[in-house]
Image 1 (cartoon, rainbow, N blue to C red):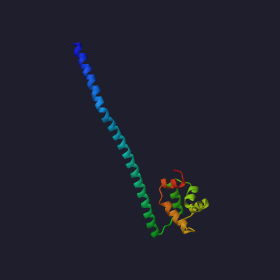
Image 2: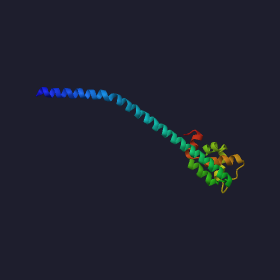
Image 3: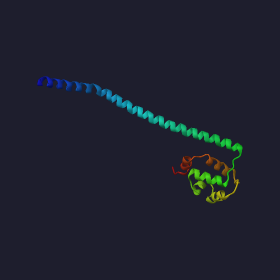
Image 4: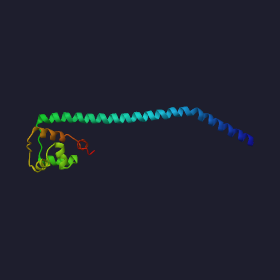
Amino acid sequence: MSVMKELHSEITRLARKEIKKELEPIKRVNAAQRGYIADLRRDVGELQKEVARLQRAAGKVVAVEVEETKGFWISGKGVVSLRKRLGITQMELAALAEVSHQSIVRWEKAKGKILFKTEETLATLQQIRGMGKRDAWEELGKG
């Protein structure tokens, strides 16, 4: 009886060894394909992020053109609100708008509609208004 058990266990061991040997190339191909699929998923994710970024950028360009035709204006409260929405300081807003820090202080204290000295300042502020927090931080080198 023990000879039969020994023979059975030896046949089982050899069969498992043969199966493992036959499956090894399939496992290698499968692992390579999994790696390829993971690479493709990463590429798709990066491309989706790029498409979303481009859509946001295209939307901002359209929004700026529409606002230009309506006549853009902003109040002192609007400047404070814009700065807080972007999560930046007065100095950082001054750097973005390419004006002095004192101009930002004066704008924030203004009551009602702010009159700007140059059209460039108005256009720059309009662009800043179309930015998101991430865009502003990238412009400032914070993000």
